[in-house]
Image (cartoon, rainbow, N blue to C red; front, side, top):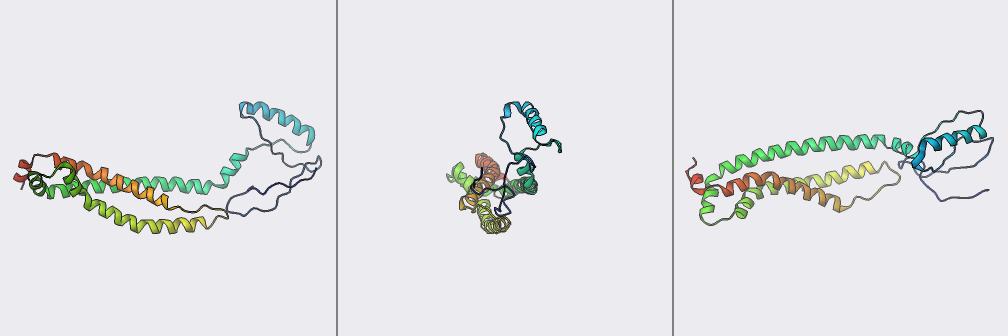
Length: 206
C-alpha cells in the first residue's frame, strides 16, 4: 500500500519540514510508531516486545516515547525559560524592595505637606495618588524604554525558528499593566499609612 500524507513536523521547529519516507517491510524494519492506551503502559510494552521479536529477530527491542523525544528538542529553550523566570523574579523582588524604601523615604520627607493637605480637606485617595503618581510616572518611563528592547530581543530570538509566532501588542500591554499594579501595591502601603495618620502629629514633625 502506497500513500501520501500531509506535511508534519518531525524535528525541531528550528528546521523547515523536510522529506520523510515511511514504509513497512519485514526485511527493512527499523522503527514502529504506535499510539497506545496510557492505562496499561507496561502490559502494552510487553505485548509490543513479543510482536517485535516475532518480526525482527536480529535486533533487540528498545522503546522510547515520542513526547519525550520532542521535549528533548527544546531542552535549551526550557532551560532558558527557567533562567529568565528565576532572574526576572529576583529583579522584580529587588525593584519592589527599592521602591518600598524610596516610597518610605519620600513619605517621611512630605509628612508636613500631607498633614496640611489633610487639614485642607484632602481625602485618602487624593493623598495616595499624590504620593504614588511620581513613582508611577517612572514606571511608565521604564515601560516605554523596555518594551521596544523586549520586542527587538524576542524578534531576534524567533528568527532562529523556521516556524514562529507573531509577537502581539497585548503581551506588552499585560506586562505593563502588571508592572504598574506591582508598583502601586508596593507604594500604596506608605501612601495610605501617611494619609490615615493624624495631621496634627504630621505638622509637629521636624
